[in-house]
Every structure is written in structure tokens, then in C-alpha cells.
Amino acid sequence: MNGPSTADPDGPASGAVHELVRDDVARKRFLKMAGKSIGGAAAASALGTFIAACGSSSSSSSKSPAAASTGSSSTGNGAGGDLAIVNYALTLEYLEAEFYDKVLSSGLFSGSIVSTLKEFRSQEHGHVKALAAVATSLGTPAAKPTGKFPLHSAKQVAQLAATVENLGAAAYLGQAGNIKSKEILAAALAIHTVEARHAAVLNTVTGLTPTPNGAFGSPMSMAEVLKAIKPFVA
Amino acid sequence: MNPSDQAPELAVVEIHGLTRASFIARGALATGAVLGASAVAPFVTNAFAASGASDVEILNFALTLEYLETNFYKHKARAVGLSGEAKKLAATISEHEQLHVDALTKAITAAGGTPVKAPKFSFGVTDQAGFLKLAYVLENVGVGAYNGAGPSLTNPQYLVAAGSIVQVEARHAAAIALLVNESPTPSGGFDKPLTKAEVLAKAGPLIVK
Image 1 (cartoon, rainbow over the protein chains, first blue to last red):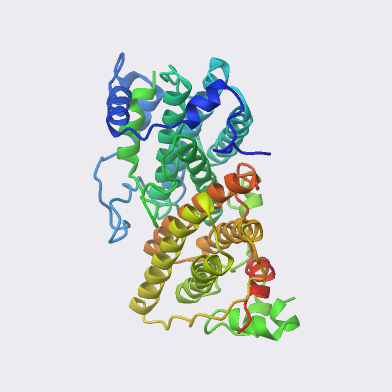
Image 2 (image 1 turned 180 degrees about the horizontal axis):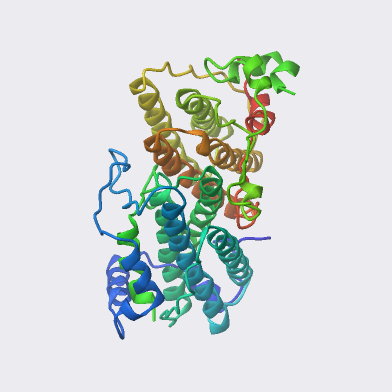
């Protein structure tokens, strides 16, 4: 499969995306917009239930590494804790899969980037499937949330995609130290690096560095991630 | 079969302190499958049995790979002579790999272990195209190595540290993929964890001393 090349825009839309403007002002404006809560509280949503179940929003835990910012609050021992983590990941994957579905239906993109987006979409759906199966084997899987994503232009959407993927990578990294089952950990690691690959591609496509945190990925706590994705949940 | 049996020079890659005999004696990871985990079965690796390599041994394995990458991106890149995006990316990656070496060395020392010494390498590439092609292979092997060994780490702090490194290796791999028109996700939606033997099969031949 050929990834998008910064040297070969295949059509007007992908060309616009590739002609990235590394404009800090525009980027901050975008992030501010994305962060606004549009519509009702998340409380009534599946996500809101999940946030409540996840427990405290404490940003430190005995498992967090000295150098990095946060681990996540562990919600229990053994399978109970693992189920919560798997359902958290499942929730994020549901949102990512839906995001790509909507992006591809939007018609905002054309050219080689479309096949990349299709590939990523397919992979996110694969993540949903695997995590739903694991969650089911442990207990009750999280309900599928309904996402809502601003989709205005190829450039804005590509930047949003990069944001979402970077968030996904940080979310998995934030849980790596909390998963009890070695098998589930192995699966989480296998997904984590794929999210990182997605992030790197989308960062590059939008003119950002593939490694925005430098030599070491930054973990984010469950609370931090859930807060960040709240605007994208209906 | 242990690749070290076939190629003496690969002996240097053996994890510090881990004897050949104990490595061979180690059986497959007992999956036990509390979950009947068919969904995750593809991700369980035989690389390091649950009762196997110590955290220090695993970190030293990672350190060997990081030495390989540092050498590659610093010295080989200069020898080949890169240009444009490739040169820029290699310079960035080079800095990262050095920081990985530093972090792993520190962790091993703090754990009371002895960091392995940097081996000598021979990469056999002579131009930018060959360099990037090998870079793509090496980064993907790195991802597989860390993901394969990660679950065997007993200290969660090391696991998160390894996770933070492998995340960046995956980013490297994807960025390089874009330059060489290869897939940024060669394993699809799930990065394949590699066994130690699989890593050595790819990386071992590049180590000459």
C-alpha cells in the first residue's frame, strides 16, 4: 500500500493538505474550537457512564514513571481492572473508527491520501473488533458511543485526525503499566504502536513532526484522555 | 534453534547473563488462556517465557538494538551521504536513538546491572535508497522487539519506559515508510511482536563484533 508522499499531491484536496501551513496561531484556534463543548453534557452518554466508572481523575499513581507525567488511576485488581482498561480502549477505538467512517463519507479528500485513510479506517475497525471480543470474554463490553466531529476542510480534518491518533497513542501508553494480563498487554502494545504509526503519518501529512514529543512518547492518564475526547462525543 | 549456534558472531547479541542453555531450555510461554483469549492469541509471543529473562537482561537486549540504530543513523548516514527529507529525518532520528541509549544505560545501571558494550556493526548499504530501505527494516524490527519483550518486563516503570521508546520507533518507521513508498503499517492493525530469535535473525547479521 502506498502511503501519501509529501512530494506527490495527487489531487486538489490532498495538495491542499500537503501544502501545510505550520501556523501556530491557526492551530491554536483550531484546538480551541475543537475543545469547545457543543451540545449536552456527556453524562447521559455511554461515555459519561464510563468516565464515572473509571473513578478518580487523580493524575498520579504509584505506577507512573518518575519522569513522565502520569499513569492512570487503576480501577481494580486483576480482570476487573483489565476490563475497565479494555473498555476504555474500546470506547476510544469506536470513536476513531466512526471518525474515519465519517471522514471518508465527507468527500473532502481525494488522491493517494484516500487509500491511507481507508487503511487506517479498516485498522481501527479491527481494533474495535478485537477489543470488543476481549471485553466480552472478561465481562460486559462498553457500549458504542456516538461521535461528533467537525469536518470542514481537508486540512482541518487531517489536523483533527493527527490530534485523535496522537491522543490514542498517548492513551495506550498511559495504560501500559496498569494492565494485569500479559496477553491483554501484548494486544495493547500491538495496537499502541499502530496508533503511533497513524499519528506519525498524519503529522507528516499536516506538516508537523512525526515525533511531537521527541525521543519518548508521552503517556496520558485516562482522565486526561477522556476530557480531551469529550467534545467529540455526542 | 538458537541462531547463535549457527553464527558465532551472534553470540555477542546474547542477553547479558543469559546462558545459551537456559535460552534453549525455555519453553513456549504458557498461555494458560484465562481468557480463552482467541482474540489476543496472535499477540502472545514465545520470546521470553514468563519465568525467563530478567528486566536487566531485557533492557540490555533493547540497548544492543539502540546501539545498532545510533550507529546506523549517526555514522552510516554520514558515510552514505543523505540529502533532503531523508537527511532531515535521519538527523532527528539519530538524536532520539542516542537518547534511548542514554535512558536504557541509566536504567540498567540504576537497577544494579551492567550495560552491554556497543558492538561493531556493518550495514552494507552504499546509497540513500539502500540506507532508507534498511532503516525501514530496522525500525520495524525495533517495534517488534520491544513489543515482543515488553510483557516479560516485571517492573511497570520499565514497561512504560519501553512503551515510550517503542512508540517513537513506530513513528520513525512510519515516517521512513512515507519516504520509501512502503506501508507505514506493514503488519496491518496490530504490530507483530517478534521473538528474540526473529530479532536476531534480522539484526544479528549486521553485528560484526
